[in-house]
Length: 296
Image (cartoon, rainbow, N blue to C red; front, side, top):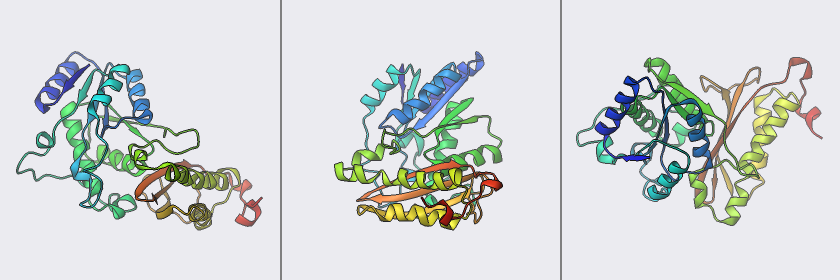
């Protein structure tokens, strides 16, 4: 594996690989790699001839009072993991390489970027869309691999690819979870043992939604949200930021769950903010049940 720091070198490598007909896969990350990231790498290894993992803690997607300075960074460990997984290139540019003096150009996907995560973190998705487009232009991948855990991000990047006619296919991989259901995240490292136990409330709330929507046929979104909210509120260390049941493409809230929906939430566990989601399918009409009927 080769570590690449400079944009022009990464671009030259990609151009040569494309010229030889090799399929390039990009796994964009902010480092602090865990099994969730590595599952993306393994999928990329299956589909591509050449696998690039990018590690860049993107300052443009952090707000002024967020955790940019303390976000976990360990490039040596990340590189060791990439070697073990058969990655061809680890692309780790500096902030000055990505945003040189005088940088002024930003990408924003309107209507999708200012709700939920975007409302809680103003400017976040402008930073995400910008850095992802820059990585696509530098690495020129045929495929890029994202985890479903960042569900709103996936919707936004998919829309950007379609709207800008980008020559890349997004491959969305399942959320990776610990045995107790907690979604893998680099920010889990912030949690102390009590907070780590409390953090399972996100998964328990999503599982409650899955039971109601898919197993018991409840279609009233507000009733499902109320049941999820009860799960979060029963955990003393948890504080709900947002909870939403939305269309999977427009991210508009739904009142009736009559199609596939994205069920997403963000929760503060102590001083750490965690997100999670599931895509759920409603039961057929004949299996519809009310909340009262659904209670055991």
